[in-house]
Length: 148
Image (cartoon, rainbow, N blue to C red; front, side, top):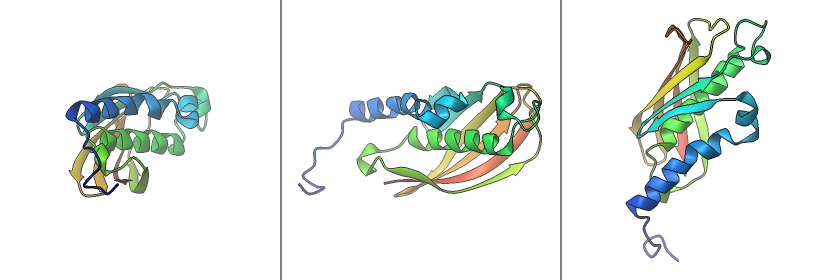
């Protein structure tokens, strides 16, 4: 069946697919272990919380940079999926990501917020930030996410 003959998804079907994404993301083995929680998920925006645990730190106090990167990457991906047109595909990956660590979260939950700023045919560009529980910035980054 050619692309033109394929039945189009209704807006309701698109909405249902988008709403299913957060549940499936945090159920993957790594994210399930990490404990990342999606707190807000709306078109082009996602907010997550990573509850503090000693095993996510370098020294029992400060998060390992890789943990922060994983939280930023996942939050940005959620923002990319949040307004995705599922007729364009469901296979995805992070193509590029840059992170600047500008602070530290000391024995604090990590809060991440991401906003999709541009959507192309396959690529979505996302700005993402991480904060400690008091709102102090820990890191910020840019992600390029591809869905085909």
